Image (tube, protein in one colour):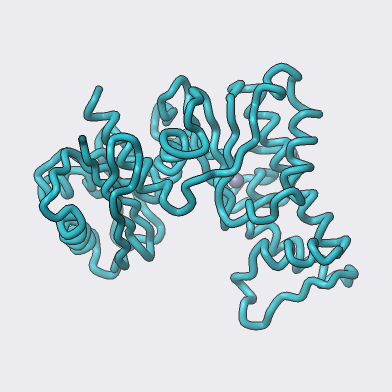
Length: 315
Ligand SMILES: [Zn+2]
């Protein structure tokens, strides 16, 4: 059996997993990234923790998902907002030098989508699109069983699909992106604006969570019958449904998979999502596309990074 090490590098934590050739996790670890150590220091720590986790097992390859724009071909990360000093850094070469085995490097959102495709909600299909619903909206695209990264590794920015000519501003500098309607950040903005405008709702933003309150607060209010909360989640579902209709018309996927904290809102989001997608997309591909929930949770990134490394090795 071939074992592969998957690494999911984040600004705060770095996750590690030894993964078998069917995509099952053999064991995992999580350590702080210690981004203050700078590029070489962080890579030193990663190599140390990777060796610790692998122990006496034989691991042939390493796959790592990294945040921020990068090139999977050259293994260079161009910049990473949460990793100070990471500007045009040769991550793949640095890690290969320390570990002595081949490393495959990918964008973290793409790696997570590939993980779901390989060993989670995408199993058994060939064409899949994943939306990751969090602070922002990320994702990944699988076409004919392969991760689609485009000419410059920038494909899969599903959150920046523009769904309105004159919509609200988005973090990316554009406006009307689906992220500006359906991310946790967008929900916070909508709730704040409504509270400031005197909308009748039971939603109260907790004092200690001014920045961090999430979809759960709105979901809890919706469960208690709060009309405003239900309408907020319906609007989120409709925005995601428009995005899904675009994906359905353009790519004809077998499955569209949703991951991230927001999926906890369940049918408050998914009922309007399915309804809107069906109403707005061509009938045949809309009937074909299954709307699914991700299965691997926070492990999708390490499993997908390992899967992509395994695929590189087999090619
Ligand atoms: Zn945008």
